[in-house]
Length: 58
Image (cartoon, rainbow, N blue to C red):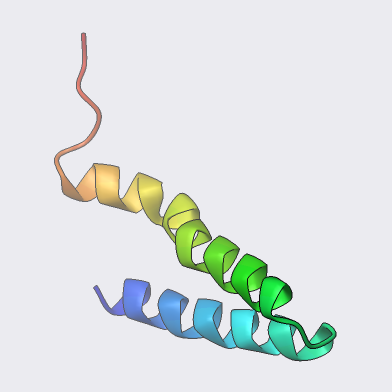
């Protein structure tokens, strides 16, 4: 659980830092934060699968 919180802290920091490097604009805000908001789950997906009991074996 602590690892997830640390990861999310750095993920949010990275999204905000990336946004600061780009030119101002509402569409850029939407794109950056939409991708960051959806994208955090991709690297954590294997951890969530493991926490649920692992992949089902056929």
